[in-house]
Length: 285
Length: 122
Image (cartoon, rainbow over all chains, first blue to last red; front, side, top):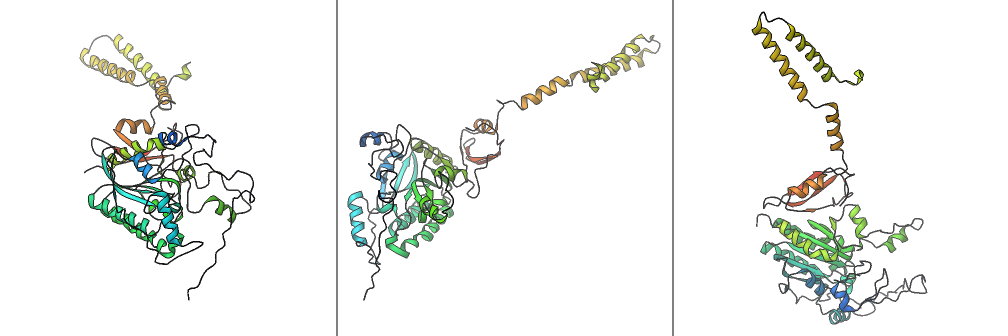
């Protein structure tokens, strides 16, 4: 007799809940300055608002296209799929959610890995996609990242990882939490092979991913305004009702002040920056 | 005015005075006196070569000048390329330290420098 756990979903931030800001959000309207753009306009500006510099989220494929030398990316391990060993369901079965995400994003899971050249330098690439179930790390993301580390170590090339994640994938329970030590070990393997590891933290990089491999890079770069925090400001605020959190709580800028980030790099500077970084990593090779 | 004179200037005046008096001595034992003369003249030359109070103060002002080179100016000139890494992963971005990766004569060393925290930020 399978026991069933009933869940109730609390809707927060809906109009009748707070009522200060309109919740409806157009994907191509800048949340900071309300400028509206066509999709091709945003694609040309690397999804950065030309008016105020707000960095829109970037999908994995588009990110890869932005970063690598044209035609050099070769995807690897694209066939990995989650098997749902827990046969998990909340309001809907997990398999259904995965299938839906796969159809809507065209990705097998929330991470794409492969080899590529950036500014004519070989590297291994691992890019996360927030649109696939919040970029959550389940066994597939963990396995893909671990394999990216192994492939980089085998080839003796640096690993560049772009993170965007809400954390561990709740639907995989303990299996997703197990990806945290696994990816940490994978980074250690990379280190033993004396390969460099650079992480670009994009909005948002939080919870299980921030608490495992994303924080372990030799060089950590953040996009401006990205939320990089184990727990988001809304939840932290609830734990201290009397005080007000600083406005930049958990953002890239405050992380930079506290020494958790090496540099904040704007998206249009990202490719040349990583190119320079790879050149500096290449000593003795 | 005399009170403003610093020790080297006073000594210089004293030496000149002795020199003048030696010149007036009748040349009875010429060799030994001319040796003394040469010694005094060398001494005056040496004192004159020393920087004056004004020159010393100028050097201090120059070293404190707003547009003097700061750590990052040296970093720019030493390395062909240099990426500054700010994070110490524990406390804060320390403004008194400049650290990073640089390219120096085809080698890529890590670099570490102290820096004036009040240096103009770039």
